[in-house]
Image (cartoon, rainbow, N blue to C red):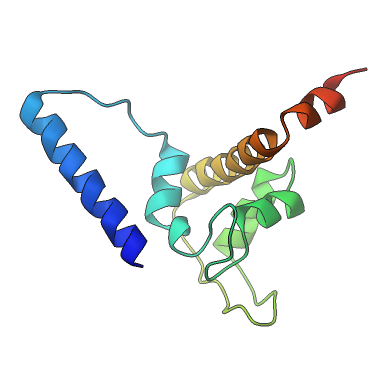
Length: 124
């Protein structure tokens, strides 16, 4: 929690500096923005927080962002040792943006960990 609070403090300071100096910032994509403000409290890429990792979720729903949307809209109790996830009624468009972001995030992390893996899969 201390790390998250410190990172938030730096983000606030950076935002205040940008506003004071007239600097612009590249807009954050919708899926990333919602994930960071809502989902990131319980889900991370490489570590278990309150819920399963983004990597595990991406493995379960590979190529199926609609499956993530359906689960997020009406979740149930899936795992022993994890609290049940509450439903997030954020609208299909927003949930789909988050689902696509999560799948992309997990894919980017996997590629960074093993850059040759994607190339090996793509070769005929």
